Each structure stands twice: as C-alpha cells, then as structure tokens.
Amino acid sequence: AARAATAAPRQNAVRALASVASSATDAPGKVPVTLLSGFLGAGKTTLLKHLLQSADGSGQKLGVIVNDMASVNVDAKLARLDAGESDAAEFVEIGDGCICCSQTDELFTTLAQLAAVSNARGYRYSHIVIEATGIAEPRAIRDQFQDAQAAGVPLLEEVELDTLVTVVDAKAFLSAYAETDAISKRPDLAANGEHDPAAFLMARFDGSLQRSVCDLLVEQVECADVLLLNKADLVDDGELSRLQQVVGALNPGASIRTCEYGDADLTEVLGVAGDEGAARVGPVDEHKAAVAAAADHSRSSHDHAEKAEHSPHDHAEKAEHSHASHAKAETSEHSHSSHDHAAAPCADATCTDPTHDHSHSSHDHAHAAADACDDPTCTDPTHDHSHDRAHSRFPIDSFVYAARRPFSPARLQTLLRDLPADVTAAIAAGNAKGGAAEEPLRNVVRSKGFLWLASSHDAAYYWSHAGAFFTAELLGRWWDTLPPEHWPEDLVESIKADFSGDDGDRRQEIVFIGMEVAKREADIKAALDACLLTDAELTDYRASDEDQRPALFPSDLRVRA
Image 1 (cartoon, rainbow, N blue to C red):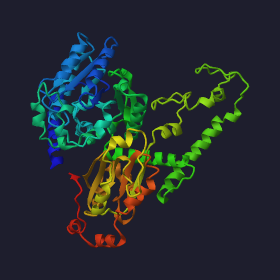
Image 2: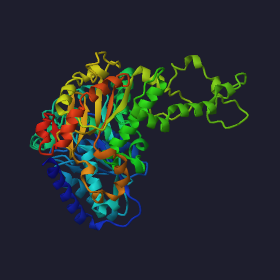
Image 3: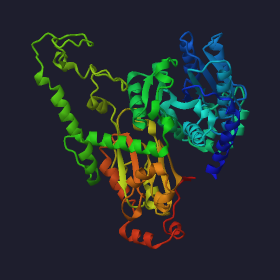
C-alpha cells in the first residue's frame, strides 16, 4: 500500500514533465542539479546564501528552487533578501508541502519551466540548486529523477541530478541520532510554526512522517556525496573529530567538510559528484558499497591486530585484498632505510629537483603522533594520516555478518532488545561500553542489510537499525523466486554473484557499525548464529509451504511494507 501511494505522484510527475518540457532545446551538455538536504536549522539556507554570494561576480548563473513546508516560503525570501540585486541567481519557490512526496509534480514542472525560460533568454544555468525541506527524503527525490530518466522524459536531456549534499548540525547531531520520536511529532524539524503550521499538520497524514527522526537523519547522511558539518565552531575538537568519524562510518564514500555559518566553497558543493555519485545508484548499490567498505574495514582491523582471529568465511576475501600485501609494497617503495639521514632536507614541498633531499627521515618522528593530520578529506601526501592513531582515539569500526540460513523471528526479536537505548552514551564519550557477552549489541549504533526470516521463503527484507530504532522493510521477493528471463538484463551477473546452493540469493548480509564492534565481532556473530534455525527447525521449514510458515515461525517484528 505504501509503495502504491508513493508511485502515483512519480507517475503524475513524469506525465506532467513530458508535456511541460516540450520547449527544451538541443543545446549541448546538461545542467547539473545539486540537492541540499538536512533538518530545519542545520544551515541549508545559510549555505545557499553563501553560495549565491560566491557566484556573484564569478560569471556563473544559478537557478534556485527553494522548497518549504509552509505556504509562506521563508527560506526563499531570506535567500533573495541576502542576494539583493545580484544577477547570479534566479529563484523559484515551492511551498505547501515537500518535493519528495506531496509536491513531486511541482518539482519537475518547475525544473522544466526554469530550463525553458533560460533557453528563451539565450543562456544556460551553470548549476541548478534545490533546497529541500527539513524532512525531505533524498532517496525519494533521487528515485524521481531516475524514474524520469528511465521514462525518457525530454527534460532529462537538459538537466541531471548530479550531487547530493547534506548539511549536518554538528552541535545537534548526537541528540537527533538518539531521538526515538516519529517525525510527525517534531514539526520543528520541517517548518517554522510561527509562519504556517497548517501545511505540516496536513502533511502529517503522509505515511513517511511516521518514520523516526533518527531513521531520516541516517538516510540524509548515507544518501549524500558531500556532508557539510556546519556550526563546527559550536563543538570542541574532540566532538568534531568524533562526529567526522561517525558520519564517515555511516557514509564512507562521501566527501566530509566542516564549516561555520555555511561558508563552504562553490567548488566543494556544486556539481562535484561525477559519474559515480549517489544520484546514479540505488539501494542495492548502496548496500553492496557498505558491505565492501565494512569488509575492508574489518580486514584492516584484523591485519593491524597483534593476535587476529579470522572467521572461515573471511579467508577468501582476505586472500584477494590482504592489506599485508599493500603494506609490504608500500614499505618497499618508501623504506626509510634508504634515506640519507646526513643530507640537508629540502623544505619545498613542490620541489622536483632530484638532487635535493626530500626524504621522510627529515621529519621529527618523535612528534609524529602530535602532528598527525585529523582531516579525513585531506589528500596531502606530506601529512600524517595514520589509521592506527585515528582509530585508537575514536574506535568506530565495522564488520559484515553473513549466513545462508533463515533467522527464527522470535529469537531474533529477543536479541534486538539489546540494541543501545542510550546512543549518546554509546558514542559521545568516544569509548565503547563494557558489558557481558550476553549483551553483544550494546555498542552497535548502526546496522543494515539483507534479512531472511523463517516466516517466509519468498519475502526479502531489509534490516535497518539506527540508534534505538529498528525496522525490517519488505523489499520484495528474492530473485530466486523469479525465472531468470524476468531478471533485468544489466543486472544478471550481479544477481548471479549473490546465489549460493539451493536457496539462491536468500541470505543474511548485515553490516554492523559501532564503538569497537570489531572487538565484539565474535560475540555478535555467536549471538546472531543462535538466532538461526536449528537443523531440526530447518527441516520443518523446508517441509512447510508459504502459507504454513507464518504460523510455524510467528513474528512480531516491525515490518515496513
């Protein structure tokens, strides 16, 4: 029901777009669209004003769409007021709802109108910037663009969603992450009630507003190419470093920038994602990337451990991607033993004169830890980016749990009660909680992945846990239930790669992220293994049919269709 309700606005938008975009020209190149997401108060409008000021006098022309839940679009008025008489931008306002749901049609109609007007006036925008509402779901907006592209809408020959930017309130992040209320109970995150609370009250009937605040916050962080940690001046260095590592663990592929008052550079925000950005992938691609990142992180943690203990299913991957081989190669290329310690070092980092001494031996190794570079986005090879030091300061790590047997829903539900109730305490101090092995999940702050429940042989679920919030989302059917001729042609090889044995692609494949979870990996895996069906239960499972399994393995888990 929920899927059908969200599909109708997208189909309407595609139809509207096809008619409005008929005036588009065949001018070369596409205008990149950048989407700004983030809760109300995070600093999206402040960032937009800064971008407009930077564009003024630079020769760039921006098209700007500002969406507001209220009928009076306060954000657009503020941005316009700050822009003054500048010719660098042209504004369009969308009010009375959110472009990810109730205002889907309006978003694409507005984009088509912007493109048509600019073409009629003889110029093209350098960029189009969309400032979404505080409760906008970036994945839903991305899906709208992908649907329009797949439908062959003419406008998508003119513009393309290029970069997804999320503005994070550095000061309020942890409290929002620990939030358990539904979005419908937090209108302050969507609209300023002083201006028009009616729009939000009307929109609360949208099922998406029943999501938890934490769940939406995690989506905004994970579905982004650029994460701007705004209001960095309101937190101390330790808090900022922790926040950088937390969001980096949630979205390893994002560029993470810190700023104050939204003072990010144009070149760091607009149209920077390229062909492999978040706008061009889907949920399964995101999951595979998360699994790869967690597996790599887990291997790295094991390789750096003095006494590593590897589970059997890890060995094949480790043989292919062993960090030990990388370390050996780097050692042979950068061996300090080959440096001439007696020579006077050249201090010019840009010097390429081979007669000068550019050896690392000139560095003061006694103070290396103190001089370490804490910027996770820095690529300067002269800076010290030691993984061990960063990890020891704020030990947030991850691993992948994998199994080819269904969970008993009842036993799994009992285990999930151990998820951390106080997320702030779990990560704010930068130290993992202690605890007995019977509480293995207490330090897990995020987990996600494919879930196979014994209540169904056909249904594929997605496990999503953030903070104290957990849900199992029904994704659809496992590919194994469909004839291969019904598989998408461009995904056949990827689908086959997930198959194993008689159960096809059915599996548990869950990424766990948290404070020193690598140290508790064995305990967590043992706890999850205990939730898998026993041999006797598996025999009953295979002997039953799809109608009998729900009664045989009852489930009270929250499932989002």
